[in-house]
Length: 229
Ligand SMILES: CC(C)(COP(=O)(O)OP(=O)(O)OC[C@H]1O[C@@H](n2cnc3c(N)ncnc32)[C@H](O)[C@@H]1OP(=O)(O)O)[C@@H](O)C(=O)NCCC(=O)NCCS
Image (cartoon, rainbow, N blue to C red):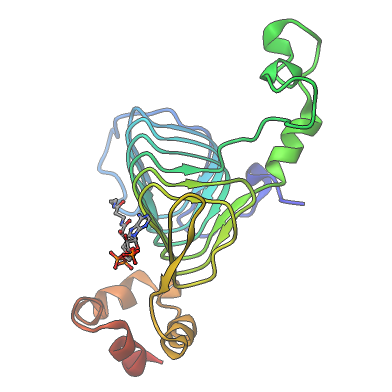
């Protein structure tokens, strides 16, 4: 079972937020510290160094790896986001399903306390949602307004086109689009994909990224792999 984020050991530079409360920094902030917009909501989540969460975006039980960013008006629940992911405006990661097999779809059956219909919310129902985690690998790009449905995993280096609804797992380095999404193409031939996975630049240190920045800019992936593999 997925370890509760509050209980998870934190790597260097990662921070746990039970509930993020915005405060203007009293002193010069650590530039690697996560930046959460004052109008964002971050609840029970872990954010890595150099991460950014945009205005009116909400996170609940999300772990987001170093350098990943999600811009404004997006949301994620029960999600494991790798490093260096780029998540566009209005994206939805794991919008919660309602119980289609029961007599009532409405959430009074599980958010029972708020409706004064019983003393306890339905914890089993929330566990069911929690067990359908959305997972993004590293360097995944989620396009504008895309939705990644509960339980779906998206492989490292993959792209979800604008407006897509992703209902099935996406292998690494694949571009998908449409409703429901289908593969559009692979980004690279298999040898380059394997080379990038072998290089795994997303695990490099900040200093190593800085040293290689000209190659990230100037080389295509095949030449990059040839140089670093
Ligand atoms: C998917 C995307 C990356 C383009 O990938 P690409 O491989 O270069 O695709 P192409 O433009 O060559 O199009 C290939 C085919 O996919 C289709 N396609 C492209 N984007 C699509 C999308 N978002 N949804 C459905 N189909 C799409 C094209 O119509 C074309 O179809 P055809 O073969 O029938 O003519 C791009 O269209 C996209 O959606 N970008 C997201 C932009 C965005 O949201 N930015 C947010 C800021 S971070």
